[in-house]
Image (cartoon, rainbow, N blue to C red; front, top):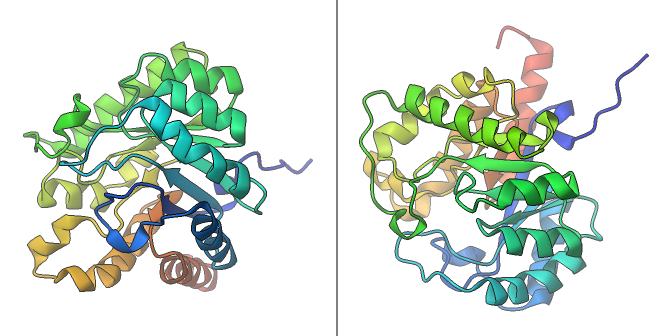
Length: 275
């Protein structure tokens, strides 16, 4: 008897398109100022191959203003309600349990928590609604995301911490098939550490959980002598590298280019499985 896939990433790697409803996102081109503009952008992402749309209403860049749950919900809910009608899963990018709860009730399918369950109620929300949750690795204090931690072995240490976070989610009632791990590219990591995490994505695949890689247009590209305007090719290159190493979800701003790269890699693998 053939097994029916429960989640979109079970049939192969997928693209998660980033939709910002925050005025101070680090990637200014992704900022939208109306629900209508966000819906249009989401429609274009889906047409270009995105199978998940990730909506965020609070910027995660280091110097960004933290906003209240009420304000975040006001930004999110009309967009979630509109976009939930599209042929794609909807994810909410938030570290606050009450915001995640409201977003799921409005139509969100996935919770994307970059803080790694910093809010002690977050896992319970995912368990109550029986929805997938991305647990991301980052520094402990959200207001200090810009600070870089020091690692002796970044891959091993991040893997160990993610294992513990995933165990906490399971202990709170989240089902094993609903846990997704994210090594947290650029969150408290310098360019060398972030690069190592992408180069060794297979270490996170070994957890048995699906792996999300969020590397899109991150500022550390400047460290390899790329101008800000050339960060798209770098993003596409790292998408290919991440997927080749087993990533299940790539979270990106530029859906068409990254989707084409991902699909080209899949076609080449079918032609020659040794690739």
